[in-house]
Amino acid sequence: DAGVIQSPRHEVTEMGQEVTLRCKPISGHDYLFWYRQTMMRGLELLIYFNNNVPIDDSGMPEDRFSAKMPNASFSTLKIQPSEPRDSAVYFCATLGDSGNTIYFGEGSWLTVV
Amino acid sequence: DAKTTQPNSMESNEEEPVHLPCNHSTISGTDYIHWYRQLPSQGPEYVIHGLTSNVNNRMASLAIAEDRKSSTLILHRATLRDAAVYYCILRDVRGVGTGGFKTIFGAGTRLFVKA
Image 1 (tube, rainbow over the protein chains, first blue to last red):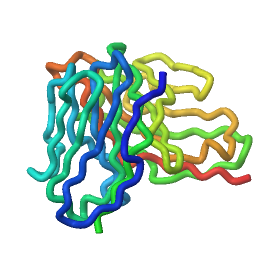
Image 2: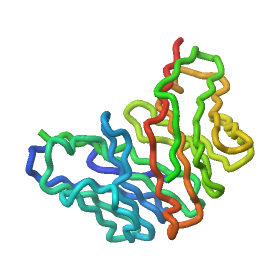
Image 3: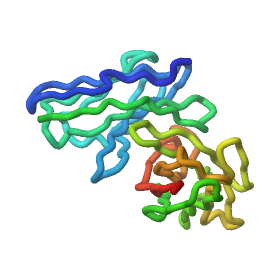
Image 4: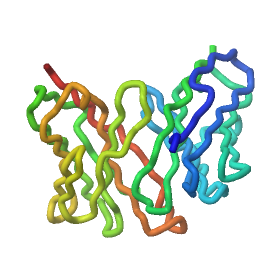
């Protein structure tokens, strides 16, 4: 299996622009998580899905952030409009039914200037 | 959510054992103890998990206190590749209805390994 695949790996964008981060989960994994990591705040859970349905989005920082999972093979995290304080590494992760192991992607490194 | 407490950093010499502690005094009976580690510029990766009994795998051992209020991740022979941030987290696996799979990471312990 290719693991959790995220794109883009790196993105530099200007403040005010829309940013879309993409994630392809491991096939058969029913849970999908979006995390954000910064030096100041560490690894924060933004939102997670079960069977494509958002279960808990209490970690989403504000209305500028939105996440969707239109099918079992794809999820997006969108920031509109982006701000410099959104600069971070965004990780997508998935969990299978066994409930034991969370698999992380390599992350999307976002810089907003 | 039950919380964990870990030292900010630890240092070890290469090829010596490392004991990484974690306190989780408010752990509930349905919380599993999981350990992940994050190598530089990578996403976290699973290391080991357990409920009550000590556990061993090819990466590490997990020693769980009898009252389950603390645990220790043991790397038997540290190598330079083990330099990473190690996270101890609790996961309630009763199911989605109880928020069971909501997985929160703390600050972790940064392990430095000296050659």
